[in-house]
Length: 199
View 1 (cartoon, rainbow, N blue to C red):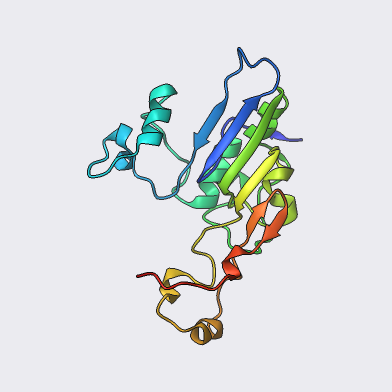
View 2 (view 1 turned 45 degrees about the vertical axis):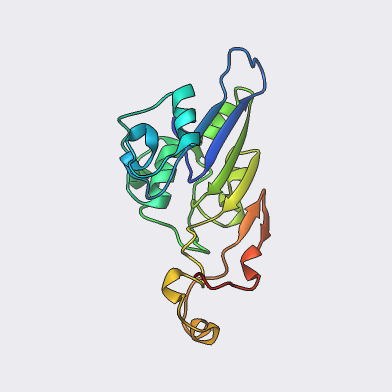
């Protein structure tokens, strides 16, 4: 039996476009970011820089001023948001690594599945981080479209800690596999292009 939850994920955006009655069913865009503090955007008091696009979204939509996450860690927070369940109940604590044998369970009902059952189209863009094996991908959990990274952008061979090491030194150290970019369920590796030094 599936467990029904009421929440959702992600570093980029999750969109629900109403397919049935567009006049009465709103579109929903949720931006779920890692490492973003309360006052890091203009509408919440950012100083020294502007965030006009996010501020416009806040002005034209709903701005939440009291949001508590179930955990301050990638996979667990996304899972809680997507299912409405505590991470400890579902069994994912912390951040999943590449090639993890665990991920989001098919026994959970996601927000995407819930709104899709009401006639909405669903998409997710950005970091998923709920498992990179085929059975864990967003397209298997209620999302019509997916374009993004399956786990953290620092879980790859060219982690910033490796920036000053030669390629030979990097290859000698055990580490992460190449970081894939996934569209739907098709994997690409754009990071295999020659690397440029940052100045």
